[in-house]
Image (cartoon, rainbow, N blue to C red):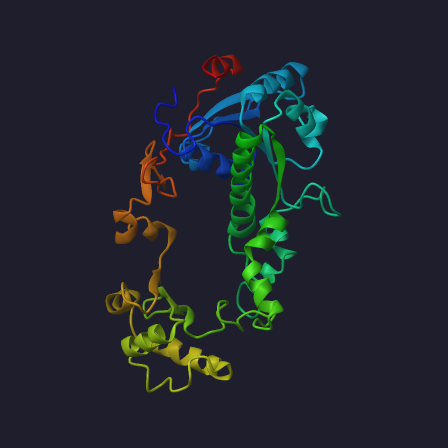
Length: 363
């Protein structure tokens, strides 16, 4: 298997990924889909990825026992010719293996060394275990998400993937551009707590300006506004409404025939609870499909709330080929889309284990 399917703006870039969980494989998938040659270094004896593991696609996998000097030297030989390397271990783990950034940059001064952790490389919590929900909790953002009664974790999108994988990829590619210009590599420290806080900068800005109440369901974008939220329909399905602008809100009133029942000014916050209850009653009079027939594709700013299974078959998703068949399973297609150098899935998750010699022979 050769990466003959490689396509995208990162073709020719050589990346080493030390195997991990969650946001690490996600970052590797994104880089591979954009055309990079990604070599995953996995633990010796680890099982091959199953076909549904889309975040394992498009990699060449090497299995090594990194506790042996021979395996460490093998890694360093690859590093000498790589452009980027990244890992997601707790601080100090790579140094104890003899594969810390000082050692690697001594072998390859132009190398970009990406480090992704939950808490960061230093700080009181640096050595503690954690997950997305914990990292998000100390940013203030988890407190802002959910109904008034309690915070709700937004899956593991905000810290693991938004604050972790995406900021790691942006940071490494920015450092790679700099290394190309200067010949000097560097370490990219992508801490999920740092980056998720940055991701939520808008809401910290709102708070600083006095435009945000520090509680849930009390603000424009957290479900507090009656015209920005989800509503249950007659059949138990849900719809999402985001009619913030005055003209869009007026269209919502027209489509729901609720103008007489919602006489208050749109931004009159003291009436929001009453307005929300009125809209709840109105939306309950029709099924989700009936509301779609009335409002989908209009400037109401409307969408049905689809299940994960339904999302694969929505006409908009289908026409844009958001989901594709990879190795017999439905997986997300590479994004973003490029006009001249489109990304592509290089191959499905594969059982094959490569050797360093095979890879070095092509480098």
